Length: 97
Image (cartoon, rainbow, N blue to C red; front, side, top):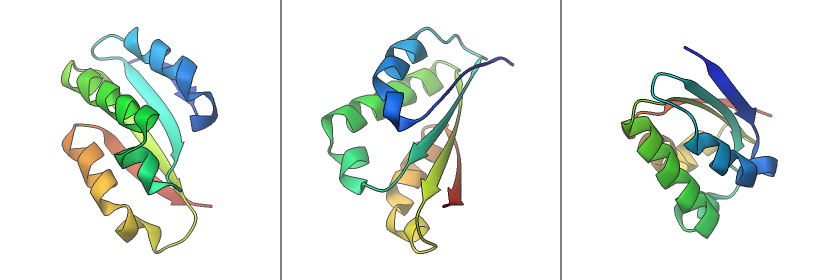
């Protein structure tokens, strides 16, 4: 298992292109802010980013995502997004600021 990239949302655009080059059985580790629900569900870059992640997970890329949350209420608010990522085969964790 190889960890090829560690990134944040601030440099997501280069990450999208980098993620394409990851091969099955390699690991992609990412820390993501989950402060804007619209970004992950309806935002153009967020939905494209999610779809790329889902495709890569189906190909066998191991994706580990840590969502950074602001409050202890947020896991419930973002449950749909967290569950969608998990169903897609992404290993999801969350921490609080």
